[in-house]
Amino acid sequence: MTSGELIIISGGPGSGKTTLLEYLKNSDFDTFDEVPRILIERNLQEKSHMLPWKNLSGFARLCYLEMMKQKNNTYPFAFVDRAIGDIIAYLHMGGLSGNEYQQEAVEGYNNLVFLMKPQKEIYIQDDVRPHSFNEALDIHREIVRVYDNLGFRIIEIPFEPVEKQASSILRELGL
Image 1 (cartoon, rainbow, N blue to C red):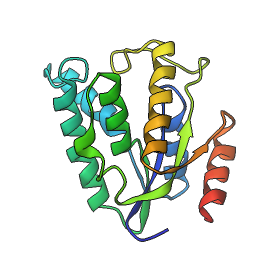
Image 2: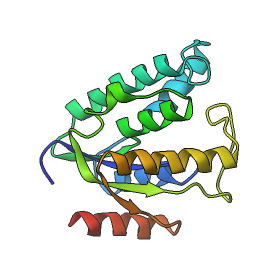
Image 3: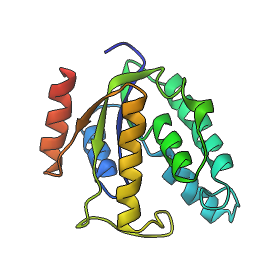
Image 4: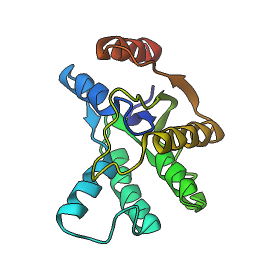
């Protein structure tokens, strides 16, 4: 690992990413919360039109700008809930290319990406997560495809107790 790297934890909605990131944070690792969720919550509260289901390309741009701030505020490394590759996957799901984000989707990130698959038993559909469970699975497949095409080494994190998930990630990273 090099200084300033972000370690990506991603996957479809409802996979336990936020719980895992919270566990890592409580274990004294630096983490960044999920940018899209923060922006959706804020924009819903402000009754803004800048939501992915109303203006996908504009929302993607907001996410990108916030994720770039994360990249610029990382030392020596941090875990991140979603990354720029996710923006590309969501753009693809909306029929857009995402090509303008390709280079930044790789730079500053560790070459490993830890992916978690949505789990029906924990999946909650709400105002911030309007997708059905089957749509969450489709999103997950696209996220896997994008990170694979970007050249990341994908490590699938099984659905198991969070302590085991964290332990597996730390072992994989040599921490």
